[in-house]
Image 1: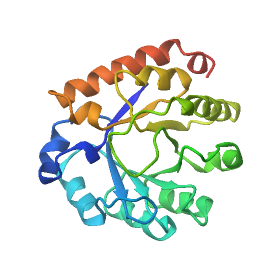
Image 2 (image 1 turned 135 degrees about the vertical axis):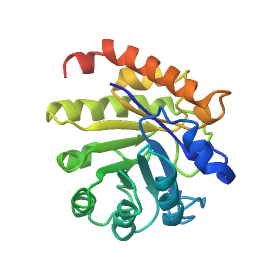
Image 3 (image 1 turned 30 degrees about the horizontal axis):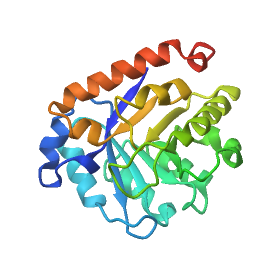
Image 4 (image 1 turned 45 degrees about the horizontal axis):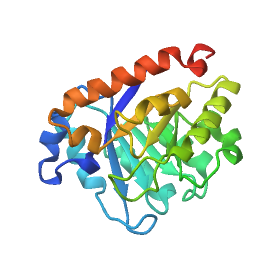
Length: 227
């Protein structure tokens, strides 16, 4: 039911291949791409994604916190990403972009910053494979979870269920053993975890623990029971 996506933003960048292998039981490997324009930080790009895709069997979930994703997102599919997330606030033509990502063979996902409401994008949901609700301001790892995002997660799940969509609902930011159950109860089923995984003594065990917590919560959550 639940999927755990460790974020390599919290990994040792000098040992990315080893860090990817340390979480091989994960569902996806979350790759944060930042351009120092859309967000005030700079991380990595297409060459690193190409190298990572060769270094691990875990599929790559690329989160593009960049300007002009309409131009760049398809290239991340070509580089080896199995899922590509663009930001609603940055995309000029989100429907066309989602269709292009899908046509190239990857899952198309759209992300919303904390202050961006879900409601204006309701009609776009059938074009997506995943919707990412940011639970911190994008741009930096290790931030504290924003509890005020829980109602937004709940509203998003209601819209997904209203339309009968098989759409994953991802949360990213401050996800840990202390917060994952609240996210799962609200409606999330895909969880990005950075420091909660890579800051643990045993990253693979941290993934298993988080998944068990989320699965247990989803199994009894009203939104899942009614789905």
